[in-house]
Image (cartoon, rainbow, N blue to C red; front, side):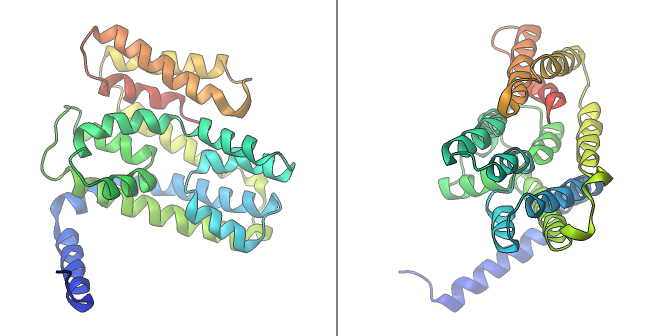
Length: 259
């Protein structure tokens, strides 16, 4: 028998309070906070770009809340402005986000026991920074207590920070010139995070292969060079660590080819 609505609401609030008191949740928030200046600058530029590409305030707000993917948004906006067919826009966004298939395959080891709805929600709100910091703390391929709380804390920081910055960019689009180049701050933040993950020979080689592949394939359409860089780094990492090795090291190196 389902709980009365008031009882169910009270139960959810109790769970949220318990989560807020969780040490791993607070740790996740604290470790993601240093990434916020770069991510906020990038979100601000994405919001500005949406409006200056011709989207109205309403559609831009809807896009930032529903899509929540800076690279995919920036790749799709010029196509939308040019009146490209819808299938081209969808395909472009899909290709740009293919790296999340690799992330999800790795996360399945840690989160595969969760209900499907919860896994789907995590897949929507978790991004590159969440993945990188999570794998930095749990490189071993096994589920442990506190992992979900840590991830929830990081997601809370990154999602709220991104949306606040993006909405600000949408509302102040005509007062913020694109020439400021604020979007590069997000790239610099990810480069800094990637550098902290280069801990051994395999990750260094994977990072080098990813960077080389990204530059070599840069002329490919729809930002396919990102996918090429990720695939090349994974292959290099697997070759470095030998048959039967885990994927966590090459995947961390693959972040060097991000954006």
